[in-house]
Image (cartoon, rainbow, N blue to C red; front, side, top):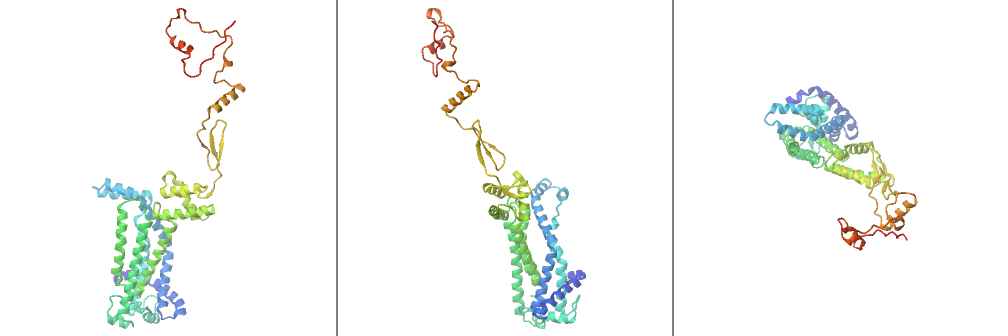
Length: 427
């Protein structure tokens, strides 16, 4: 471990300088030789580093979501070229290049923290062995050796012997109890962070081997922290516990306010957003407008939660526009046209409906109205028949000729339905 830490010795001077600056501030409040002054200095170092790494964290989130989106395509490539590993790798690299994703982007925050982590370990190890390092001189070294956190020296380890712990002014029981509690908290925070990511912020519609790997890491990482934690000084445990708590809080904020599409967190977020927008009648924040804009742009590709969100706004009389702005829609009015067709006006394009069915009296009144306006008549009445029309002569002999059967039935009154009125005979 010392060999690995020595590789990052180029950054030990900046790290030690930051710790000393924070120590001068907290030392004036709590006392220069107290564990609060040195412990809070390490905590402040972590916070400063994590603030600087926020852009990398945002990039990590985008990369992780892009990888989740590519999982179906990656699975197809693996199945298509399962017997040709070289071609499979080439197609994977081609897919990454086309989509602009990088699998290593999800590890950027951890990789960026590693130099500071090993530099801090190197500084604390120098304090334990009584060596000055960086800007920590002899007086600061003696002050750091006197500092205890809940009875455990900053430079003490779980695996240290009783004699070494006594030289640092503590007991072996205090050191092991404090380090054990910190290791448990460190592992538990790591487990909870990974678990909330897998249970709340993962697209449940995609089932790929990537998800299985993430589930496996959810159990592997806490075990790794527990194994390596027994070899870390108390100061390093303070550093790692603080960064885990920061990651957990940062992850909770992202899951609540910018969840992965298709996840349970998105369903809960859209439900809260719908209530908020319905109450105020508009989107107020830029982040809300960005979410609504992305949902509107998807069109028919929306998932169930997104469709439920849009339908909820519609029922509340609101309209989501393409620019992400939600505004109140116009009131819907039903208008009946002259031909009996009803259309809905306001709140969007008119919606054509089926014409109402008219009764017999309404149809007859409509025909009479059309006749009065000079329109073509659609039915015959007694007055419509020509007055000079001659009756059809009957065939001689009273025999039935071909085609006369129907006529005879009509004259005998056997014809069904309305009959044609007879013309008056001429005198």
